[in-house]
Image (cartoon, rainbow, N blue to C red):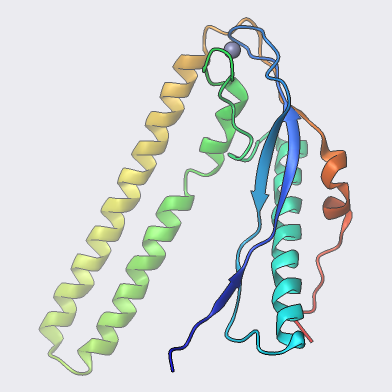
Length: 197
Ligand SMILES: [Zn+2]
């Protein structure tokens, strides 16, 4: 019998709007779709399994929402789900730059983690094959991971430069108006420490 794992992610919609810095028009009502990390379970056979998966998915959404709120309210970093493209003139907004800067090392961290996983795998395979292949695999994994990291940072820098240029001519610097009230229950909810009963 095949072994499936069940995934479940919870999401919430945060209403927001902004005044375009370029054409000065109001965006009208928009929604940011915030999704929590998917929870995973090997079984949903019983009611208890299903409840646990549901609880974990909800907890992940609460954690994500705390992070989104904290960054927006305290650092003026608006999650990428708050799209900054004006519905009228299609131009980006200056407040959309901060999140690219904030996430600049997300790619490199992921690539280096993959590289390290490959290195660990090579050590494991090394037990079966010669040391020479391991050394080569070791080197290739790290070089590829480092190259991917550098490319990822360069892409982010290009996106920042492009957006800075595209938003430079704005009449004024605005910020999005976010209706946190719609998700206040999630922002207020403490993250449960229990990983499941
Ligand atoms: Zn506009």
